[in-house]
Image 1 (cartoon, rainbow, N blue to C red):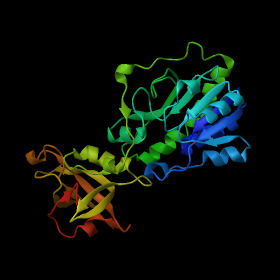
Image 2: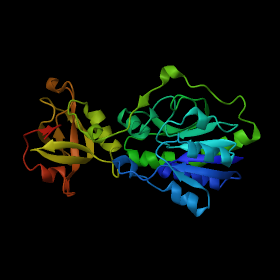
Image 3: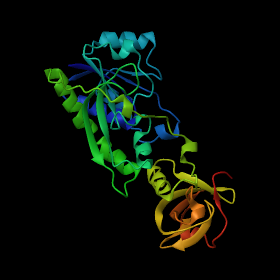
Image 4: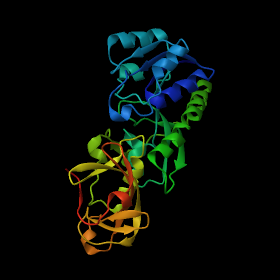
Length: 317
């Protein structure tokens, strides 16, 4: 088959590499220009550079609906479009253009976690599995029929970085399997409609989404810290007006009462911060901060940084 590819960052790069390694011909690649958005400078393997290295025509676009792009797409004559991490909605004149339509590769177990940063949101929410889905694109974002879906378990200490590596490794086999099914006609009868009653859709993450709210339960805060692991922007709080980035934390063994955000007591190799919506009852665990990073990039063990107990960590300076 002749295939056109829409994609960006490492997800798109892995998808394009899988296509180049296949028996199918890559006729055109469309990708975004480089961005200064914090989350788009992470995992930023260049789709454009990979396409150019293999002499594949490449177009840089922020949006896919200009006449020049659509004309180039028609002239490339694709049998199928494959998309992965294209950051804007594709219109019907694009996704319905090839005979086989458009196959979108999305890094969640659809219908849950459609949209952006699905691994981070899933980890914060305590999901037991994450994964990758190949589905047919339609007029609603990440909502089309599913062809192939693969999952990996989430371990109790996994970070978003761990899960990124585990799921990105699923892209190539999913792309190969999906294209083989479509090319041979064995995809007939295998497309499964999504259960829209189970659908959820998440927005892009920003600095506000990494701000620690000490009224959250300690279990969720610990997952937030793991979800915002390096190289992602870390979960942060403020101490005496200065920002602290929390790089390692745990749920306390003891239960601590008081006001959320209180710097309370040492436990093990860290310092307990009172947390939770019911913290005043004394029946909730706290968050044990183990390691933190100050605004100048210096790293500290929490027991070295908090020399005395008392005072508060706050959401604002």
